Image (tube, rainbow over all chains, first blue to last red; front, side):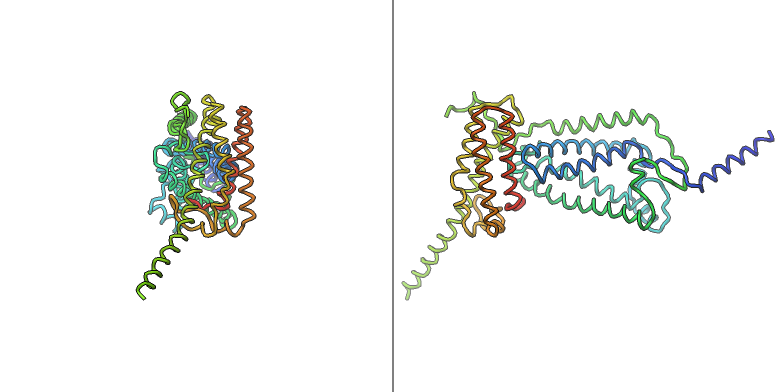
Length: 253
Length: 153
């Protein structure tokens, strides 16, 4: 019985020590990191296949679009069932959170409120690119899977939007990278390594509530995302220009 | 004096029509040409790339020949001075740069003609993989000119 207070004290001290000494804590779960880096690669590949090459590359641009749609659906689901830092509820940039952050009173793990604004903007822009891309055409031999459902002039207009939104997206990506460089050089905070390893050195090591059945949640989210993307993209890319000519149904002249 | 006035008016009208007509016609004819090409590239895309099971050799040959015929029809005649402004079936998307870089325009046009003629020749062979590869090259020549001289939507 006499040992209990001592043990309690040691435990309390250890807890205090662990709070002041630098230790690593998990910031980003594996699905968040996979999402981030596959999105980076997808956007780069989408840019290359749109800007260069012919119709065979354009077809790959379309497939990448389907993949990005799946990524977005996955991230949306993960924002509700992922680990705490992945959930929108925990990082959605509400005015009170933004004010607290700007006054230096924000304490938390994961996206800070300003970073969260950037995250929401980037996700919205990528979603806009997928949405407009579905209806776009390149006036050569590529047409988005839903382009036939709108008129040619609407498809052309949305193609214009698709091209314009890209510049806005590129601007936000540039801002995102500049912010990371700013944090690294000025704030002495490396944000890139945690996005690779998942953990960061932190003073505040209060462990977040563990999320149960992470693996199953991941599998379920991926399955739903893949199905949603497939349902949208399975529509044959039949455009106004691609009127099939069934031999039997065609005049023999 | 009255007659002079009337004569002046009708002359002005004639010259206006003469100036506007050819430009609008050139734009309309070339828009039609590329629209017709697009019908044919669409058929080849469908039968050779998207759904090879629907491949019909004669139809693909006919489509490739049609593209080559339009390419060889002397489309350059439809790119007269001033045709970067004006409306055919819709406003032209030709950039003014087209007239500032005539050598580049000529190079891209010949590249397109060559690719179209090669596709027509290769379509005769009936080798799907070869047709697909050449179709890819042809579409690159379309894109090359679009990137340089066509205003985006």
